[in-house]
Picture 1 (cartoon, one colour):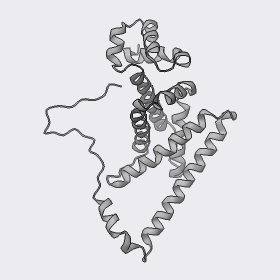
Picture 2 (picture 1 turned 30 degrees about the vertical axis):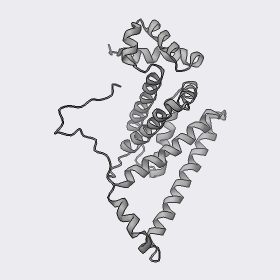
Picture 3 (picture 1 turned 90 degrees about the horizontal axis):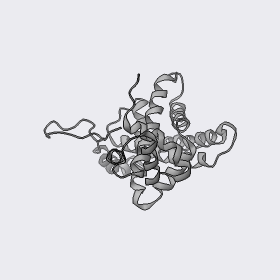
Length: 228
């Protein structure tokens, strides 16, 4: 029998209440009662209550997307289509009402930074799953651009009632095409012999930017990983 952690049991139980109570302390308390987990333990697992519960749901969706990317046969697709597939898989792993309630929560100024980090985390998971190995400024620009594409697509998807969400997938394709067109223009500018001298200093400065280290430093006594 597969072991289900108390955190996963709470999250599963919470999804029944989210459409009515949102991501709230009321939902956490109701989920604890349904899962037969002491409320004190539930609060220890999700110290900030509703926001930590919503973030756990978001990370669960990211994991489901990564697993599906590993199962699907995408090798023959163009890279832009692999990105589009990843975003689509991420949305198909989510419950629309749970995401809608989450968007309301993360729109609050006190939780806006958490929401931004969640979007960035999704973009990061997509790039890692698709084999990104960039270690320079491109590490940041790829994730920033995809965060914008994903965030805009989520908002469109929340209001989309077209059959099979086809309008959302069309919207996603347009956003990715727009990014690809911009990248082509940027490459052309960098190759232009008249503009190249003007870009020498900015390009040198950007070349000094490095992606953050993913491994903990060996000279520090320990590290902490956020529980999933």
